[in-house]
Image (tube, rainbow, N blue to C red; front, side):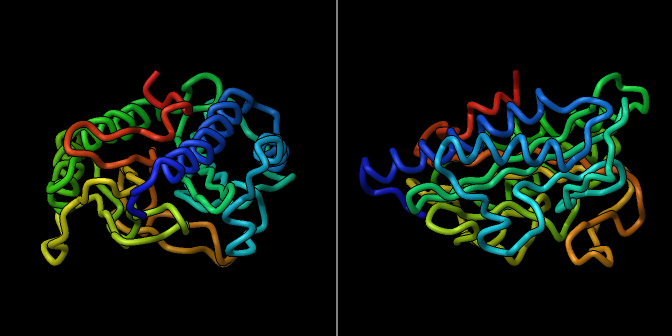
Length: 254
């Protein structure tokens, strides 16, 4: 989406506030002993209070209101009454919603309770790399250059990036042009970021795998070589200088 009117910016800010606040509150609410279904229903209630509609459910008939992935699950995890969070679990929550014809997306990985399993380093790497990547985005910057930055920073930390998951354009639909904003330098992507465009920038930082594969449930993705993955995501508005982070209320960097 390219924003050309004040009303469009207001619309994007409202839906972005909704998904960002929902993500923040779900993260704060998560605790050992809770099921992922309970956490999902908590988030659904917040979205409803905003008048926002769950994109996964509305668009793809996903069996949940938000995507909640735990442990070796990379993304698109299905909320379940049988999946009980434990102290030290690595969890990822992805919240996307529509409000008055505008769409926004954000996500975060974090450790539930005490970091008993040593996942915090991976979480911190993903969050820090996202911050570095977003700080370099402005009109005219090559999309492939941001992918190169993300992969380079991951390698410095002894980590990998997932090559078949990527960021994307967003605004009037969940996925718009640019269709892919990868976490590596794709030499076939020649496009540049455009001023006034809205994009969802995501990091997919992994310990062992470079690709994600779908399980038999048709939704949940795990690594092709196992291991763990951390993801962080902001929806931003590209400008000539520093981008406007529309989902800043999720407080990813606090």
